[in-house]
Length: 169
Image (cartoon, rainbow, N blue to C red):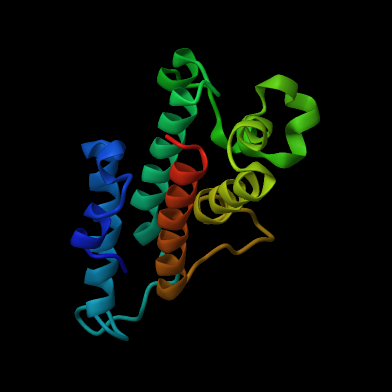
């Protein structure tokens, strides 16, 4: 996992703002703490069934980053940014582009950033790191392992890297 020094060296670190930085660092801290426990939890108890709690702060940071970059790029309004109704999952979903038309952030990324590959990467990162792990459905068991939590945190960091460069913030 990234160390504090590594994250601080990223070109986008200062852009994030302190609250989003702290969320990424919280996921790093939780990951390192849980990994240090080894095969068993303190007290000899079994491992957790689902480690999505390790991923959650980074997923929240990703949401904050996306809202910030979408506002600055003019893809969403201040009302969207500060309001309670804008949904990134809906705005980024490639299967909703016909329904959303000009409101589709996915389409705006294709037009104004580095095209479909970046838009797809941001969507897949949102889907795998935010939507899938944090919803429960009877026929879908979306539990993630500790190594998967780490991979998804790294996926978020990579998506931030690509969006920051690709959208020329």
